[in-house]
Image 1 (cartoon, helix red, strand yellow):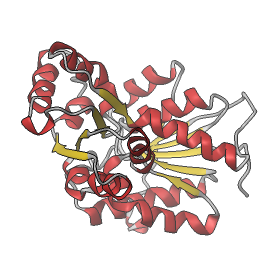
Image 2 (cartoon, rainbow, N blue to C red):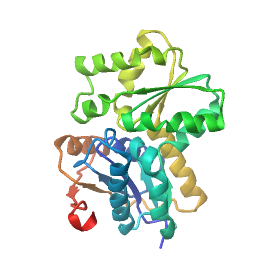
Image 3 (spheres, rainbow, N blue to C red):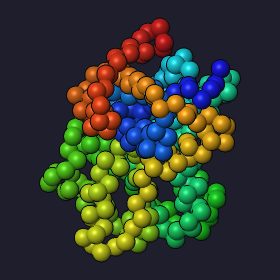
Length: 276
């Protein structure tokens, strides 16, 4: 039974989805979360659509067993390749699914930029999901797609500041394909963790660009749909659960950094042979 006290389910391949989960709690401070980080298989960006679909399906069934009231696919690669499949699994339970693509596309269409840059993993960029969806709503917006495969592993490894990250960021953002953009979509939920470094690049070259962090846009959308369905929790006694498919030190450290409280990571072997 779906009710206001049921938790919000969020999943990603690793720590990137924590940016979405954290943004949701800023918008909805009384909500409880069930978060699943598929750390055994990160990153999803270089995996095939079939493999991402398989992993996403197993995680979705796990979240449904936790009686979540909405599922947030906090991963661009999974959103680009498995959104409809996850919806098909959640629909019989009358659970809505939120991805990290459609809310951003709607925001871009409303603002009618002339040229928008998209940076993300190979899976997201190769899917062409952003150009396809943006042009369906706003055919005149020019979309520049650029795969930035080193950024997510760099962030997962903890290299978010310093010379290494600066060099990689500048190399990608200096690509000619991104010239004259008015907005840049951080089409990977890891990327808000280096939003300051990205903003600094554009400050240095004196080129004003609106940096669209998907986590903030998606969080506002989640709040909207819960309000529409009268599912916003009013109980301040929330309880968060964090599950991982494999322990990683960076995930634990990042989780505690975000939530400013003692966080217990639960190892959940949902990818056993019985689930395959």
